[in-house]
Amino acid sequence: MNLIWDSTEKTIRGSFVNLVITFAILILICIGCYNKEFGLNLKELSSLIIGFFTVSFGVWKVSNVVETINSK
Image (tube, rainbow, N blue to C red; front, side, top):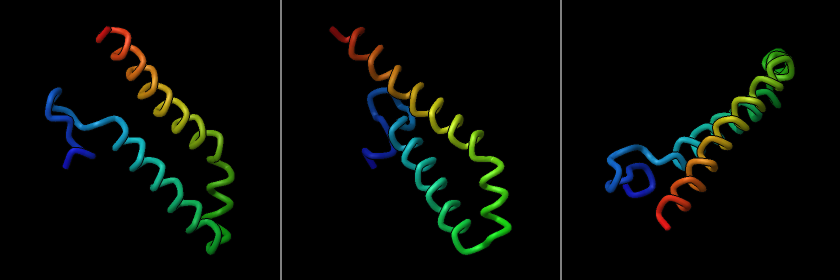
């Protein structure tokens, strides 16, 4: 349960959200390997997927740095 819920802040952990996003992208890639039409659609959306993942991970990482600075 500690992987999902941060009991001190009473929120869902950002690391868990990024884990779910990462697994979703990996599942989409695996499906795209076996279904050519789906794979072509993924190829067209690749920049959007990469951008979404990068922004999500970046926001989570920046918030970790800010929390570390503020806790000192």
